[in-house]
Image (tube, rainbow, N blue to C red; front, side, top):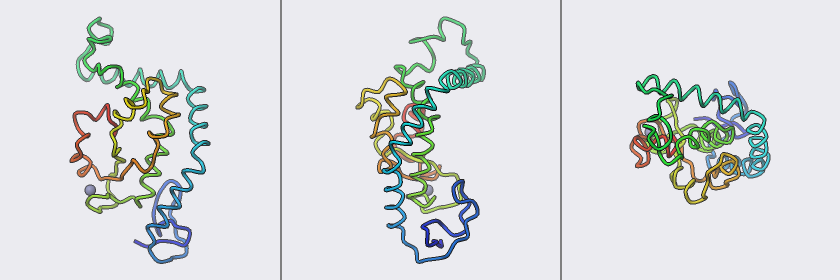
Length: 194
Ligand SMILES: [Zn+2]
């Protein structure tokens, strides 16, 4: 891997950098990590506020999107969304009301930002096996569900304001295979994040 003077990866194709072909420097992972951390800390309030406004403005749209997604899942699983058994505590996917919130959180701009910050800090490299250029996932070291619980988060706005949830230091880049080996992956995926 070649690193450019501005800290980006030479030739790295990503949303922010495009096909980046800058001036090369020695590999300095620590410096890149620190830079990403500082940028995040500096912009955190802005990011949170932006997300809050986005959410308030698009509340109905987000709700509708979520509803459609759920309907699609119901149909796939052969459940009837309109039957009484499909609602509330009898619902096949009822998990104390946390699932919906978790799903919503995963579609927040903060979540996208957190994920991309974690990837950037880790140089788009799986931190377990060192693979790059494959599908990467951002893993919550302290589980997503635990953070929601500990911070008594029941509303999306509370999630947006929760510092612990968006702490880049609680995230680690893993490839899909390595992610599946973590203890809060798989069956608890919906609740605990990807
Ligand atoms: Zn891996």
